[in-house]
Image (cartoon, rainbow, N blue to C red):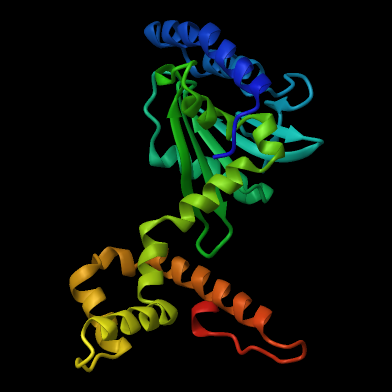
Length: 264
């Protein structure tokens, strides 16, 4: 994660110190959803750095109704926020409601929060619509003196948003996911390298890529890493990257056939 700017770190730390006791008090008295929204608007302003009067709105219409809160930067919708009462547990159906809002608005990012717990999701406009949890933190559990804790908040701050830090964080998580690494391990390029190294280790052995792949699938990798929607998405990601690299290496005018891995 990129280094947190000093001024932003100071604002986040000061905001946490002031507002953590307010969150604790609200949770102790079991504040309702309307009161929680008021507190969250203060959080968004004092900690996350958004202008309360021009960038935070509770009047963003979605199909005749209104989402709880929305963040607009330079007039463009950046984030939809679904708010639950501070004592409420955040549940899957709450996420679905927020994602439904985002889908209708073409917004890639949604947050679900009860003021204390914050979850940010990346919405993928696939069929069916999908969402992936990118970051989660508990504001009351964060230490204002720990830069790593402040860095989690920075991902959702105005300054982090302007520099696309949340998107970068998502890309890094996606690259290091077990699905991406699993798909890479059974890709043609990696199997070729493994075969070469195995032949160095055992020069007399007759080994081909298919045999290596079979061992990886049956004995090394977990089944859930290679099967399912996320595994298929990882294979497509790797296929597209391989095609880009191949196109870059080809002389101009030469066409590169699309691989099965890159098919949408």
